[in-house]
Amino acid sequence: MLYDVIVNGKLIATVGPTELEHLSISVSTSSHDGGIPFIMANGMSPRTEDGKQTYTTWLENELSESDRIEIIPSKTTNPSEALKIRKLKRGVSSSKEDKFCDFCKQDETVVGPVIQAGETPYICKPCTELCIEIIKGLESQT
Ligand SMILES: [Zn+2]
Image 1 (cartoon, rainbow, N blue to C red):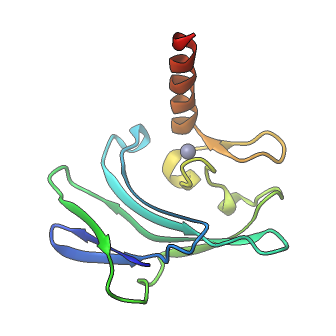
Image 2 (tube, rainbow, N blue to C red):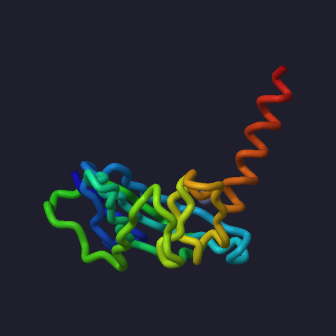
Image 3 (spheres, helix red, strand yellow):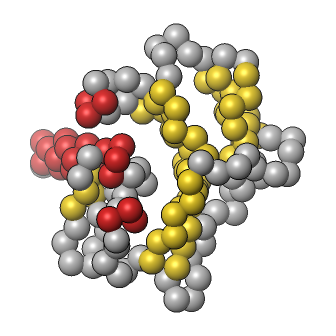
């Protein structure tokens, strides 16, 4: 299934399909960008035998605070043309343009530098901060 992303009643992209390993349509803000809200739609293809995957970005748009967003199942069978498609090979040191956070699936250019320990997934600063908050919450329960 595909999804239509509609902003203020206007179709801005059709994204999917949901057979992807990971499909994410999100509205977020980042202190890196001065808290300006933005909408993103990204999808990760299933991994092939040799560890290759593609990461497709359909949407990367700034929003204004009054924008009304709708995400509805699409009646069409073709997604919009991708803004960018990156080839990834996971488990192998990524080249600079391949780097993205494995937690929020966002690009280094969006979330700032991402770090990695050995062959583990990458993580960005906002996700690290969220993890600290989660751990603090867990600690306070004990
Ligand atoms: Zn992240």
